[in-house]
Length: 169
Image (cartoon, rainbow, N blue to C red):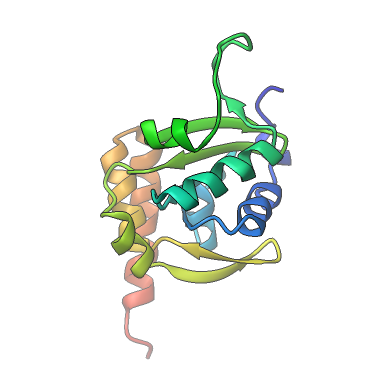
């Protein structure tokens, strides 16, 4: 399958499939940052997801439709993507027909899912209404990740946040 070229990456198929299956999720990561005004590019979709059993089943069904497989794992590694597997783990990185899709039960630096969802906003992305993490939560997650690219994005997001909060003249 291989990783998609960043210049050709389209988040639509993954987001549309998750929405069509009724998955309870919040968009985090690079795509969320872009929706909020970032100029950084990304090559995957990152989402936080509710951990109740019914939602785990919807997540598994959506990933089955997308032909998801563990990213970076040899093709012969036995892996069953179902609600039981999702329940036993937390964070997974997948390759899908729609590009790379990472799902996080507990994203580093994020509050509990209920709070992440409560402070999110609804945005229209690729023709569907998607919950997008707040800029403050994105900053916290990027700072907690600790990689250089994440620190740079957190810095840009802080600048965007300051501009959004500045009183209009």
